[in-house]
Length: 355
Image: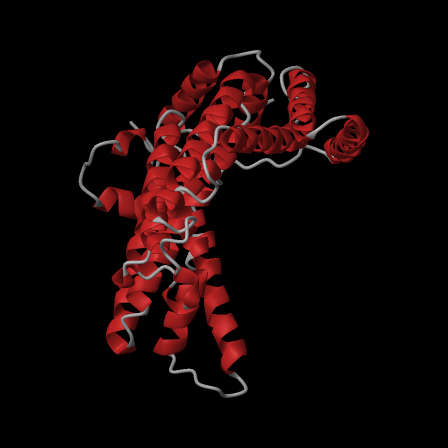
C-alpha cells in the first residue's frame, strides 16, 4: 500500500505526525522521484467539507445558534447578544475544530465569531465617542478585527480565519484611502472604478491591499512549499483576496487606456499576471482576469455585434482556459527553468525532479 499526499495531510491533521514531519516526508519523496515523474497531485489544496455529515452538522449548528440568539434577544441588549453569540461559537469550536477537526463546521463557527467580534467592536467604538465614517474609527475597526482573527487563528488554526482577517484589512485600507468616509466617491463611474489614472481611493486601496495580501499569502506558502498543511490552505484564502484586487486594478487601468494601445497593455498585463500565477502556482490570479482576457480575445478576433460573436468568444476563451488548466504543470516547469535564480525560488512549490 502506497501513502499518498492526502494520507500525509490527514495524518498531520489528526496529530499523528507534525506538519514539519509531513513536509519532510513529502520532500524526500519528491527528491527521490520528482514531482512530475511520480505523478503526484499538482492541484492547490482546497477543502470546504469532507462529507455530507459536515453539511448536516453545519445546518444544525446554524439553526441552534440562531435559536439561542433569538432567545437571548428577548431578554438582552445588542452587546450581550454579541458576547454570548461569540462565546457559543468559541466553545463550539473547542469541540468541532480542536477535537473533531471538521472543516465546514469550523468555517461556520469562524464566521459566527467574526460577526460577533464585529458587533462588539462597533459597540465599543460607538460608546467611546468615535464617529462612524471617521477614518480613525475605520482603521481602529480594521486593526481590532485583524487582532481578533489572529487570536482565533492562533488558538484554532482555521485557514478560513485568514480570509476574514483580510476583509478587515481591506476595510482598513479603504478607510485610509477615503473610500468609506465619503472623501472619495469612485462609484460614480463603474468603468473607472479601479483605474489608477483617475487617482481614486478605491483603485489605490485595492492595489495596496492586493500587494499586502499577496505578500502574506507568499509568507504562508513558503512555509509549506509542498502544500500539505494549514499554511498552504491559509495562503489559498489570502490569494483569493489578493487576485481580484490586483488583477482588476492593473488590468482595468490598462484597458481604460483605450484603443489598440489599451488592448496591447491589457494583454501585456495579463501575460505578466499569468506568469506570476505560474511562478507561485496559484490559479486564482488567472481566474480573476478571465473577463479582461475575454475583452482581449474579442479585440484580437475583431468580434462585433454579429450573431456568432458570443459563441465564438466563449469557444475560444474556453479553449484557452482549458489548455492552460490541462498543461499548467508543464508550463510552470518550463517557465521556472527559464527564469534565473531569485530570492525565494527554492521555497516555492517544486517544479521538477531533483537529483
